[in-house]
Length: 373
Image 1 (cartoon, rainbow, N blue to C red):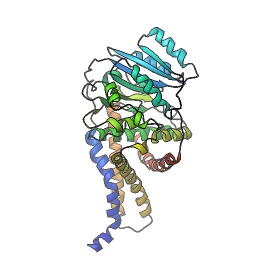
Image 2: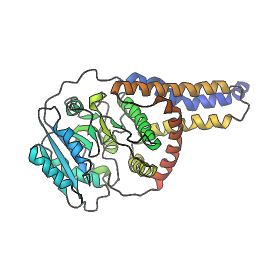
Image 3: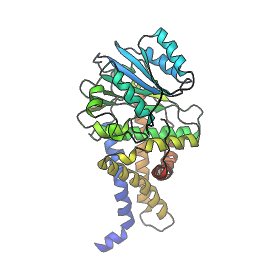
């Protein structure tokens, strides 16, 4: 037995580290990604669409044009204007004159709040007219005029609904492609895990929940001093397998542009990951295991390449199987959502994810940036 273990040590080690990846991409993700075949029947209850915005004069007109043209019987649009020094107020007032469903809430001072966005949302949510709340960001737009209908269609039975925010590269830059890929992998994971009852995150640019759920969970109070987390930490706090649903449909997405420089991308990722330290222990263990598995898959393989390992062909085959599985899942997603991603980039992007995990993971530990998100 000892001789067997020694002879196949590297093969056994590699397989052990690869196993979580194979379970994820060959079993969990493929079995859970099912598109909503038809527009879900709306519950027709009123909806408050809430957007926190600071100095978004360049994005607000496009967003408001999409929102006011939603096909939904009863809704309001709440723009929380958080200390803007540009022309945001003027733009909002111009739209208010044409559409009486738009409400502006002005934040003049955040009173030293460590998380200004949570502070803004906590001031806006109580003023929502309806129990059903739908959130997006000012630099996003809904994929269709059915967005409200789809994103709120399950709120009557599941008071928390997770949507998908998709990035559309504008210049074809590598940083844009990588951001799109990383966001895609993230969405594939959190939606798939949610559908088997494990909820650890969502994205604030496309999420819906009821005011009753927000109130019962005491809002953002337990993590108000954490810079980010108005989406994922709130989900960590209130979500369970019975109260959470997901929506996958081409018309339910929101679109936004990815960062155009690596510097912007870097600080965006720092903000997003600053909440990760506050996840539930079970969530941290799960994500840590997947991250370690991903890192080890390449690290061990590259370590063994110069050596005369008898089973290197087997190790190469297992690596290829994983990449093929990710490619199949990615292509399935793009077909279901009518989105596009160049599948031949996947091996390169997947390898780049390792550098991303190392650099951003280490930086998020030491960074203490307090910027508005």
